[in-house]
Length: 107
Image 1 (cartoon, rainbow, N blue to C red):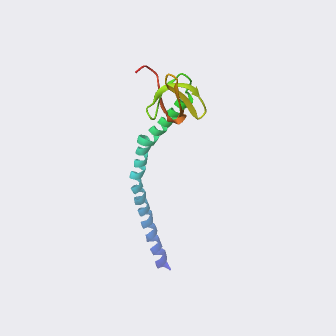
Image 2: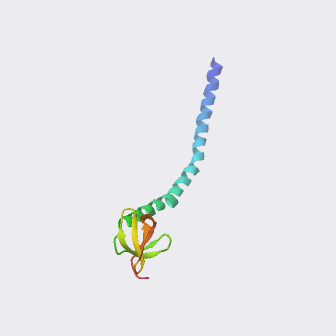
Image 3: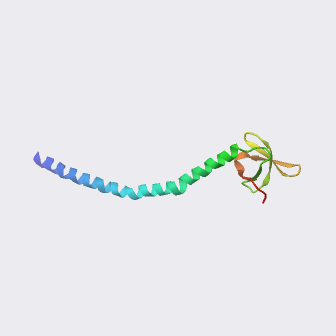
């Protein structure tokens, strides 16, 4: 019986030391995740938040640019769509999510 207890005690010490070595191997993985969070995930979340705020603040008369590059002036704002006048008496409906920016000054 004492040989079994002795074998278990040695294995137990080896497992504790091996467990600490195993934890050290996860440190680079954790550091990579932290770097990805600050370089990729966080800035993307910030851009999404700004875009959502831009879409909620759209109003009639704003000059906008769509994702397709169409420039125009908003003539009507609905829940999902925006009517944009691209030329005199030429109006198109654009999905709200496709508006990329509001033009603030003359270009």
